[in-house]
Image 1 (cartoon, one colour):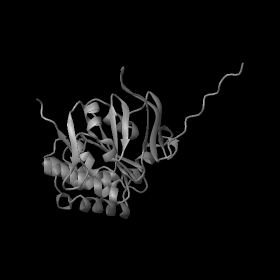
Image 2 (cartoon, helix red, strand yellow):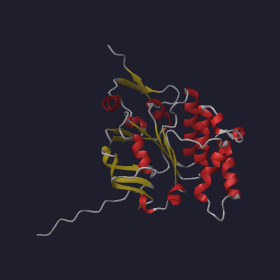
Image 3 (tube, helix red, strand yellow):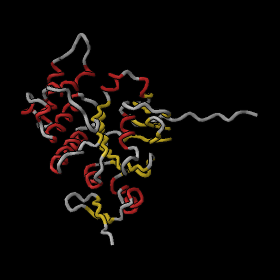
Image 4 (spheres, helix red, strand yellow):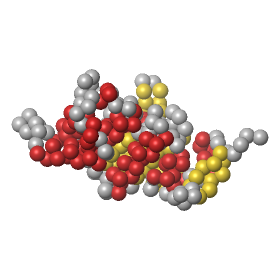
Length: 271
């Protein structure tokens, strides 16, 4: 009797994706058997309730968390086969709570984004200086360049971290809850920056909690629950009243945003 051959797993057709992903912290499994393709050139927002695996997935895509099973792929090859600097030239990651070294200036922190492009014989180049200057200008932090990072407000600090990501000059940018702890005006400043990255042709993936912000800025939404992808697609197709109640347990109506026409989630009052 001939044994049945197992068909090989097809790698994602997009630049970044995963197959059969199992992610855990010690003995606690957060994600199991997940397949995902990150659409090239889109601004993808991952949404879902707390502890559903959003940030865990982003860490795996950035290679800051090693899967216990399955594979993350970059350009069709397993991410684990790349050297760290090679990954960092393609994928930049802004974690939830980045920590700056004590006493570092804004310019020095942003310059650290150039590390993947440097080596022992060419530690700093004219291209590095230009990239840092452009990143500071694009994030409106050039006037802060000589100040200490620890002197800045939360909104200023977040823009500086994004400047460091910009200076890295990657095609793919991952942002893990970039608006957390910011006031409403600074939240939208950061999201406008993310939108500008997308408009410039980069693939952007962000984890957000606010569904209305996700609907306004995303071109592609991935909804997760309990470590699984339950829906994905255009915001209008994903962020429906039925899905929001099913995934988040929130009875609501969804109406067009009067400013943008994108879905606007309006919670129903408890009776």
